Length: 304
Image 1 (cartoon, rainbow, N blue to C red):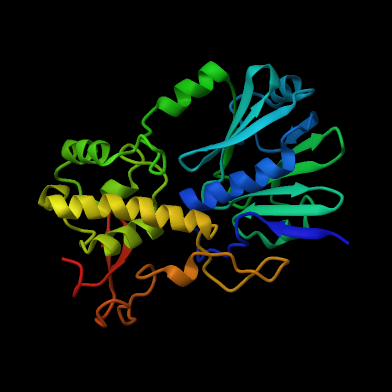
Image 2 (image 1 turned 45 degrees about the vertical axis):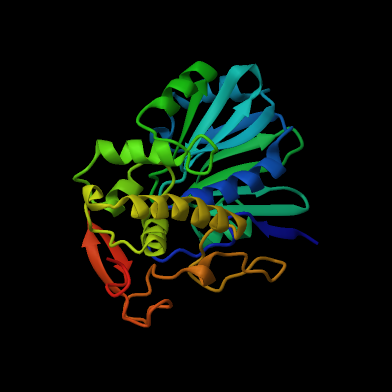
């Protein structure tokens, strides 16, 4: 009997919500357990715009390579191969990765129903086939996702381009955070948190939760922050993202995995998409507003 595991915490996202750091980290960990050590025997894709080289180049370079490691940078997945080649991938809003083995099907990313059948479907736009005949599919409804083939020096250059620090790494300190804040005094706090040039991996969900934790309104400008509020924001980034990774990200429905476990951060959300409901901290009403084109939820009573 097949074992169905879901390393994106079997998420069903409302609308098209791009996975944030906790979701992508969860996908990375599941993928790492599934494909490290496997050797590619073929690669195919029907969507040239997803690739940075012609398909024939991918096929020539990838065939025979062994998967050495799977990593994450910001909201991107990195697959490192032998002979100094790497794939840098981004799921964007509707991408999904599916590993299909003889006794295991692992699904991560956007909830494409066909993908949970663990077979190629109309949304499958790239397929890695391994020597043991297991496969990795890249499904994408809107075809916004991509797979980039790089040598290690090229990958390093690509990752250094306009990307801020990793918030859960030890070198992301309060001093680093304060330094980045000072560079953009007129930026709204929510927009600052969501800009990967400042700090990577934070999107609409966790920026709302971090602002609530720090008791600051998301539309305030960075320059209005007091020292204690900066410290609280920094602590919120570390605490909330760490906890969300532990619970394998945020699910916006009650879909569970084969073990019957939701494994999600959803139950811990304090304000995200809770507008019109009672604040869990002060009893006031959660409201919403548009900030930089994104809907933000906050409590006007306890966030100042």
